Image 1: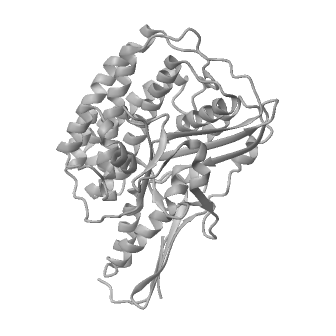
Image 2: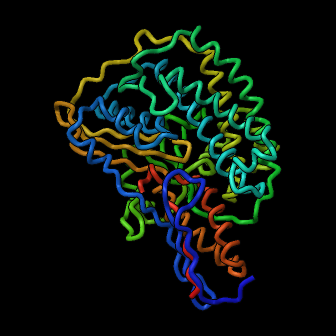
Image 3: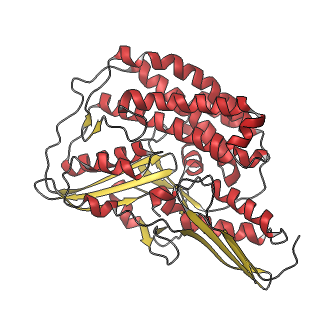
Length: 432
């Protein structure tokens, strides 16, 4: 317990998050005076790199923004370019894209659950330390992650930065017999995913709730992944085409990532908890049953329980992958031609960490004249800072070391991808 009324806490490099950032907390007179989630990675200028490139290039260029969720960037890019050129893809190609995306959800969610977040709940500093006592748990996580990677490698050509995705579809589509071996892998993965839900549901979750507006895609009839309209818990809905009318980004001095807010309404959150809250009814019966058994109600307002939502979504992604494989009929061609034309295209998909928006403007020759990419983490930054302020205010009696550790865990609830946002963690608590 500390009785100091003025102090500063700093985390100069947050561990177990993707990318580099810091947190600064300043306490004055026994009250939190300032909280900053500092993203200090240098800007990578992807939107500038895209200017002057051909309309066929964004899927390969933007995939390099992230090694964990490259498919999300490829899918949003393809959707936006195809929208600009007015070309819909074959339903069988769309199904294969959803299958590829399921692979990414499985590997990304499992990475976060087992290697980044679970050690916090179990009192270990890392998954390596966890493995010394519970090798079986870490091996289960790696086996589940491997199933996601197998889907990515088969469809995308490789797990990191897939090379088989192109505007209009794929360079090559698999034969049914090539997908068949994935069935056994995914059936085993489904058992592991259900075990994962039961495991994380037993963690001790601190009491902490927020009331942020949630934003996610929604597709009536199925859980939104690779497409959908934007909906919020505030009752608002709009198409990706109108995203920029509703989502405003601002520069803040302490971050190389922009802060997003809903026009006229303020900060909001995207990600698994938002998706679950807005789309729970479209989960499969088995995933719904797992969620209920894990204690999840109709919404998820405790950020610590986001690890349970990720586990439930992993169950769904495995089941969905199996369904798509069982129903697969190869398209007549692996892709449709997408001739260039002047126009503006909009694409939004559900990356594992939340809605990822792309917009491209093309000239008549298909050269990109402007690009805009809004990743999930930059949309969540302002809400995370607000949550941290409340979180710290309720724990000022903790000493600096304990408070710093708890702040880092709190931030990992949101699974920030700082490199995507370009832009993360180093904690400073200033009490002096």
